[in-house]
Length: 279
Image (tube, helix red, strand yellow):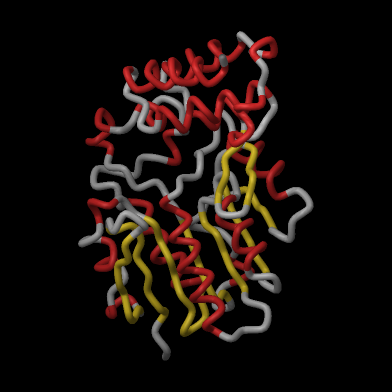
């Protein structure tokens, strides 16, 4: 019976324009019935929980899957998320993967890493977990987001602070090996084109950044230059439509070298990197 209900729910979600209807119908069935997705066939007909249709109706209304379940999966992490914090996206996993490789290539014993605009803490926690001897610092401005970040970083090695990313960590100036950020980068002019899951549920502070979407990235460029040691690296996520623009913010005149753009797993331009020039 449950698998038949899942098929019906999949059709409902597809009709509502949900991008991954089968995945979401199965995830919600597993969530409501307290099993893993691969165990749905073990749920007896008599154990079907009618609350399934309540959560399907919420997803049908384009409430994010992660808000309904309270969890977001990012690389090897299971994060707590909900209203007030940006839900981490799969595209950002490739950004973190590049950063991990870059830090390992530095051959620094205890690399110093800063995550600006940390949100749920996904990036900072992934780096702390996958680069075992790293010293990771993260900053977030929003008190609403920090309620979730604090839950996620509890018990970790991440040093979390509240504050403005553009003024953060003056105590680390000139010492940092890697600065990474997934900042807001959607132009205000594109509000109506944003998926309802993001537009109606993610905090605006985490989405929009000026008329061209690059306002905060320009600020992060100066902050990264202040924080990094010579030879240190900055990694900044951006929209797939901004691939030609972001590397040009990290110019030689501003003290950068090797500015480049990189694709995500779908081969779309997704993040820019640059190295602080040696004196």
